[in-house]
Length: 156
Picture 1: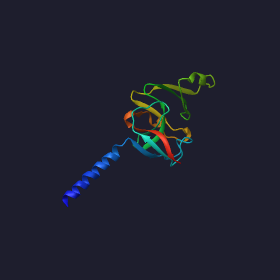
Picture 2: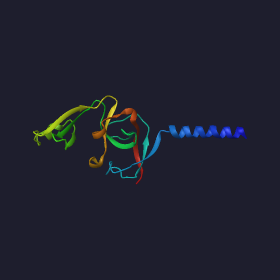
Picture 3: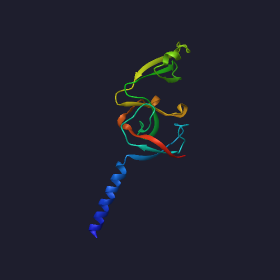
Picture 4: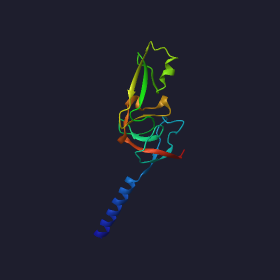
């Protein structure tokens, strides 16, 4: 009887270890930050990898250690720019082609900062910029905190 219990425990532990270490994971989108690409409660298939590039959609740990689904906007050691009104109300991320934007805006009341994504970090944003809590607030994400890359959606 004890031998049977011990074998069952060992098999159970092995199955739990295999389930934990498998390279694929089902992820549920929470919120509207990735709309229109993904909807709230949509189920995604994600794969464990360390091969990330610009525009990949990833599952990462946010600053409060909760799981988030976001798109990679900037990769390690890329430059990006913030424009902010002096009263601190307006904030806009622009890419390396910001010079064309400057032609249309008066810079009398705007600060502009050039920032660089640190090595082994990524800048993540939601596709729905108006409803996304992302790197614009909590900064870049360390590569070790990016857990999976989304490879396809499963259910709506």
